[in-house]
Length: 199
Image 1 (spheres, rainbow, N blue to C red):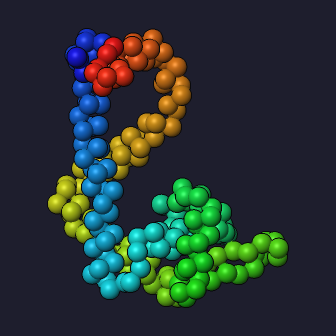
Image 2: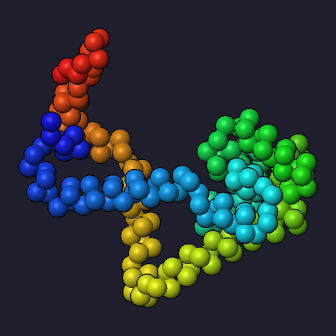
């Protein structure tokens, strides 16, 4: 069986397709390491913070640092905002927020824009945790990037931002390769009732 990542054998000679395979390999390995959240665990341990990572995520989402969440000046944070920023279910966000309020790291307040609305903000203790963890991460990442040349750093960020957007128009890209995708689907084998593989 050929490589299912390629629609046609000729694409092995396509430099962009070869680059896609190499980038995917790096990204898959990186994803597995990120899933372990080694830096986050190390930060909580080294800083002596007795929270787990989901709780830290909620504090960070309430803080809403602009570069990470693309927040705007004066934007208010609600439970629904936390859920949206973290990509989690609203009920889970509500439970985690309640834990942080009860622990004294966050507090509820009345919206200045609409008195019927309850907003969230960090207490001094909560903000100190977010600041410390972000400082910890930037110390380590900054040390790593200090080993790069200034030119490499200048080139890397715009390229990383550009690459991070590749899947945003995936529907349009899928439509461009309808025949190739159908061809790939035909090549997928499925097990029969006996557990043997059949086309």
